[in-house]
Image 1: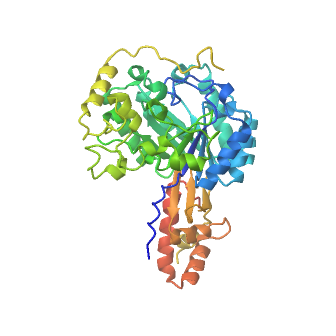
Image 2: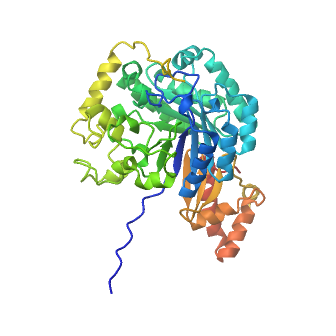
Image 3: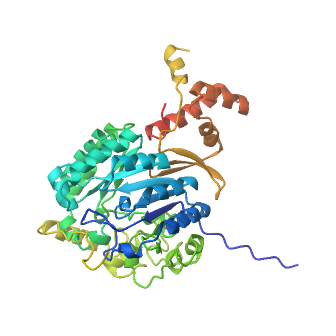
Length: 372
Length: 95
């Protein structure tokens, strides 16, 4: 009697999906995580396309959907899409700039079953906030939106991206979030992908300012324990170990672009040679299990030394593939954020050189005139 | 029982908006979903959280579980309070 070979162990199923509903956005933040080659309105998926994606996502095992952009409120069908997510049992998180959001929209989203709203705020200083966003009046508008969110009964997260122009106000950002009634605040040190990479020299803070900001926020975490949850996205140019990027490539998350391309992370299109599949041609399940881009760095087989034999390889998964490519030209190298990378010194030297140079002008995130 | 202890048992734990207990069909387990958080529940946590219906008080939840598991009420109380107060600090339960 022959014994059947055991079935190959199935891939872990994804828990989260980032839905970039549109790349359109009124703001022009120089650290935007969208790709530099933005997708225009003409290639965006229809309402029916997105609803099918959400239905397939729930069936695949996804639990939380992050409705993002661009500015997701630029989609006229936002309420209908939220309702679809709620109908299929998905937990929904709206990631918004607040610009273009009305009080009526907030109420409609609440009634449609939206679970949580994350509002970006560029700085605690209004003039600086508007300059960073490239949008006059953005700061004041966001104060109104925060009030509407709370009045409707939503839990509010304030998201603040920290960089050279606002890092000295990291603690003030936490205080602002508390004053706005947020139950959670993300102090996110800039990650250098998307638009942040060409703007890196204008965004990179000094080591001293970074360390000060991190310790001030840590002290506030003690002070506000039980009142507000403070999450920190670490400044990885000054790190010892790399971040466990995406919780591991193709292990927990997937990202769908406005046109329907499915990516292992929002920055993964920067790695040349990866083949991405689209929900227009494949089911979400097929893409998760079989698309070449998802399988390229799944698990640990692709690793080289020092990752391959490292006892932390299942903790941080070698860090970030996009960062390894951006800084070293090799997406399968150890993320240089890791102190065990032979190229670790490159990060500190970039950070030091750029932070000590002139701040310069931002390359604001905008569509080229020919798109849209 | 002191008045303070009695008042503590009269608290009614609920999930605030944005926090949901859900049965994850794909993995056959209970999960607590919250803003940027996902907590997998073991059998005990799932049993406790399933009783947080906005009606039952902490005392009633403890009593129900002690009866169901035929366990010492003091032991159950310690576990239930530790779980719920931990979640309260994370803003995932309101009492």
